[in-house]
Amino acid sequence: MSTDPSWLVSRPPELVAGDGFVLERAAERHADGLTEAIQTSLPELMRWLTWPFEGFSLDDTRRWLEMADEDWRTGRDFGYVILDGEEVVGSTGYTNRIGPGWLEIGLWIRTARAGEGFARRSTLLLADIAEQHLPEVEGLDIHHDVTHDASRAVAAACGFTLVGEVDPGPDRPFQRTREAVWHLPLHRTPPAGATS
Image (cartoon, rainbow, N blue to C red; front, side, top):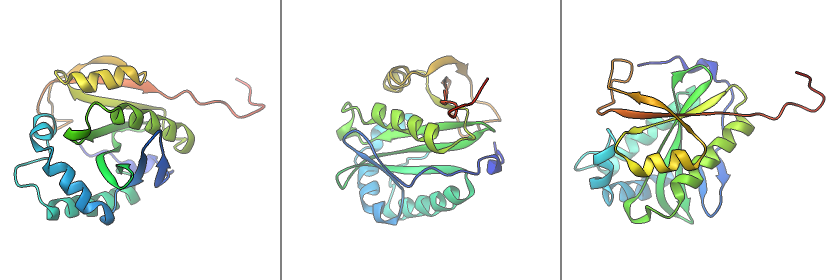
């Protein structure tokens, strides 16, 4: 499915400090760290995601980074690297494929750092970034394999509401399994003096 991203004019910040980590716009300087994180986490990543594959290399990471740079400029995707100091612990970001007003959050954490709260804290920070910096965005989605208990726990802990399950279909050709779908409407504080 190709959604016109032009409804989203604003852009998120490229660097945001979280609670014990940093989200930084994915760039060439992260290529080695991303590749190492992916390669050491392949069995887990390949179980749940569509893009990892055996033999994933530095060249594959660099190709993704080139696409990520163009996607950021056009508003199709906003890819961040999750950093603990200089260590890449995963990546996350927004995907603009649902339609006007909504962005989907994607996220993965390297296997060796799973269970440390990076997924929950990154998701909460992305919600905060959207509230503060993306005024066109009305809400956020999380989609995950219905059997992925860790993703389910993160979505629930971050205040998302489970709205249903969907089978693979032509609108999401990359989807391989039945997915749980979670929504989080954004609750913006009206400007001072505004009346309803």
